[in-house]
Amino acid sequence: MIRVRGLHTRFGAQVVHAGVDLDVRKGEVLGLVGGSGAGKSVLLREIVGLMQPSAGRIEVLGQDTSRLSEEERVRLQARWGMLFQDGALFSSLTVLENIQVPLKEHTSLPDDLIAEIARVKIAMVGLPPDSAGKYPAQLSGGMRKRAGLARALALDPEILFLDEPTAGLDPIGAAAFDQLIGSLQKSLGLTVFMVTHDLDSLYAICDRIAVLIDKRLIVGTIRTLLEESHPWIRDYFHGPRGRAAQAAGRAAER
Amino acid sequence: MVERGSLSTAWAGQQWVLSAAGRWDLGAVQGLEPQLRRVDPGRAAASICLDLSGMTALDTAGALLIDRLIARLRGQGHSVAVVGARDDLCTLLKEVRRAVAAAVSAPQPVEPVRPFRDLLERVGHATVTAGREGLALLGFLGLVTVTALRLLRRPGRFRARPFAFHLEQVGLNALGIVGLLSFLIGVVLAYQGADQLRRFGADIFVVNLLGIGVLREIGILMTAIIVAGRSGSAFTAQIGTMKVNQEIDAMRTLGLDPVELLVLPRMLALLVALPLLGVYADIVALAGGAVMAYGYLDITFGQFLRQLQMAVGAGTLFVGLVKAPVFAVVISLVGCYEGMRVTGSAESVGLLTTRSVVISIFLVIVLDAFFSILFSYLGV
Image (cartoon, rainbow over all chains, first blue to last red; front, side):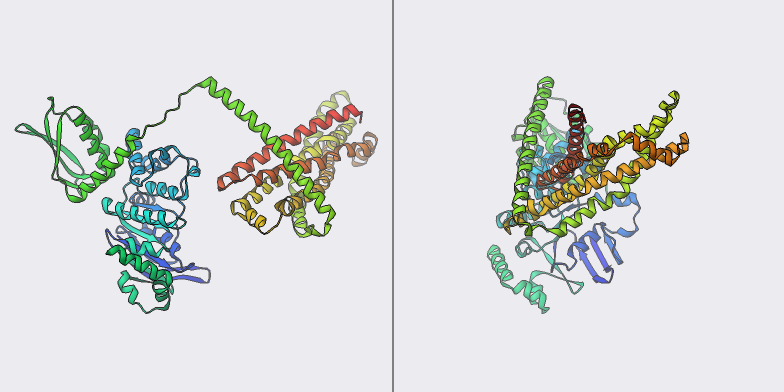
């Protein structure tokens, strides 16, 4: 679904990525982790085309993103959805209107059907129906994220990009959001690429994990990464928080 | 390319079979929707079999259409059975069914439209809001005054550095725009005045017109309006952004007074800068007028200055400049107050910045009118 080859990113003299390779397979949930400032969000922004890498090749759904005409790019963008950290809802529109935006832009369905699709999405992300008429400022952080997710899912994308989906949520809300993403991923057959800091999310829903470290990616399952000898990865997964999440993950498996 | 979604109908004995095939996704929904609306077995209480075995893909929009179709047919008294759906399609159909049920069960509140009442309500609302805001602004003035008096007792706490910074921002950096606009105003005023006065052969009196007009009114009014647009808005935006970043809250928890730290330096800087800018604007506007008078009426600079000396005295300049500190207080007060009112989102910074400019320009002009009445009452 996503193929990144030999990606380099430089900001002035500062090198962020030096030869990043990544494959995301169809139907999997891939978590991207890394220290603060390691360039996780930059990588995400480059894949969705908000930034240009200094060198390297990015293919999404089999198309090289740097060599698309404007028209092809728009068509490709309709096939993925992105959830920003705080939802990034359009503040002048209600939740319902926010979700209708991509539907109105990319399809020419009748208005009543668009409205109904939007209402279904609102219900699917677990928002109460009366939130449809509310403005983003009237919602809590968790609800804004859910509304942002509903907008990202409006066009039934094949790939869903998530930027720190559980950041800023309380543990209960975060666990519920993980569960929501997991169940939507199954029922809609999504491929999910998420940037996260949340160890619990990694254990709960990620099939594979990519660690951005020393300007490169190390990809593996939780099991293989636990064996990894790199000091940062050891600290990450075997630190006190890592152990707690591991225990919770095991308990959930049982 | 994979086959687009389609629906075919056929009778198989007593059963009416609807066969869905291909991709039922957003791309296909557009074509399918009108067709599905018309689907009808043509007899009452038919037994219908919806065969989804040929369906290769389904998304939420497609599932919604299927759900709608089933609901409509059942509603018309037919019996509907769904067969042949793959497991993953079944999961999605159930998910959509659940979501539709949740969305429909909630009543949609409908606001009745009452044009006259709504208008009245809006006017009333706006009036009350404006009144409250005026009161709050007065309250803020009180707060700033008290803080300033407290500072007077302990002048050591005065922050010289931000004061100097803002003096540069609102004073020095405004010289260009204030000078340019004042010069142009002087030119326009001289030109229009000259055009009229020349008909009476009273060319030279254009100097009187300029002197009194600029010194008493235009010079300081124009300066105040430019500064309100330039610096008042900047005050709101700066303080508002700090509010959004919770910097103001941080100050309070550190025991610092945001009024003392943010509002007073800005207000004092404007108190010093605005009268100076006013004098500067007066001079430049008169220069503009003098250039125009020379070019258009052949009044030399010497004649211009002599006539000016006869037309106006120091009192005229004073009448104009006495308004400057009042305008300065109003502009900085409104700018800082609106900045403090910013809540949460970045959107409100923009909104309140606009408000701040509108309100301060409004107040400047109202106060100017008030001064005119006062002065004519006092016979100045």
